[in-house]
Image (cartoon, one colour):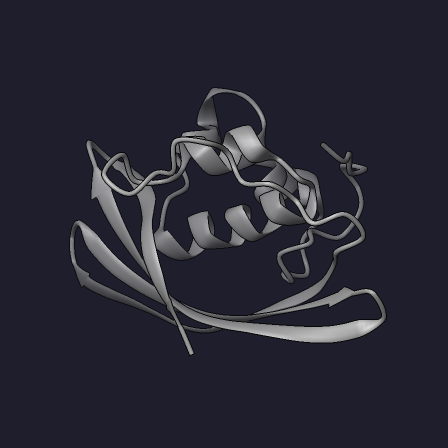
Length: 132
């Protein structure tokens, strides 16, 4: 797991300091209480940047959660996140479309995904995503 200075800009792309943005979801008991699917998605992106496997597992929907936490590609650098849209379909379901840029081995990559989220007992969880 990597660390981040609380006063550094949040890796999720907001103009907010890490401590006041995704850092509050990554730390302590509030980490599972992101108030919206978009906030959870941004915090999951930050968790990939910081290689926080436990956080990613804990925020994955129980029905689709992998048995093992994600592996992180050595040398992969996440470069930025662009949230395209956040659509709340009803009080327990939402969709977040985003693009994330990364670099590995000198090559740039772009991940474009439409992710589905579900709220269970007041907590948002990542269900799955469709890559395009």
